Length: 218
Image (cartoon, rainbow, N blue to C red; front, side):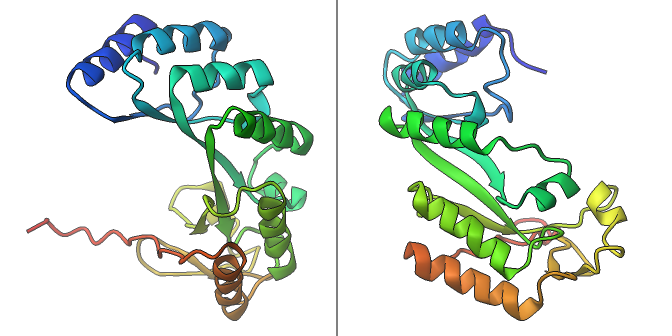
């Protein structure tokens, strides 16, 4: 559920008065508002201190005008899931992607000087090594590579993907976080090579996602 606008604006104003320099707007679909323009105008007023805001949104929803409003509201980084540019992989896991709209949204935010962080999933069904590299190439072509985040696919219990994992020849860790280690389309060695290509292509060092350990912190 979403906070009422007035409460959300009050939180932003309180954070600014407390001296916060950054604020993460925890809403996995920040853009999903029939009056996104009005929402952003109000957010800009609440964020008069100019805190750096972070939010998750779909780039397909961003027009040039909306991008300008995001920038005026103080959005520093937009997190936008990509996962893969392979239509078969996305369809298999129930994701929709409008490539031209994604590209237009990315360009609009970049023109407005809003950073973009994309996520790529390694080990999706129908994604072989070549398809993974095509996704990396897409990121590089649109200037999205250095801020991209690469994650192994997690076969979480109770999910549709886990139920189909055997049909897709997916091997995984026996315990949490249940990362995929190979599939019918990509071997473990090719997954390792893909990580190396990601690092070399974007001149970054891939940080292995921390594994949960379920022990009390000392």
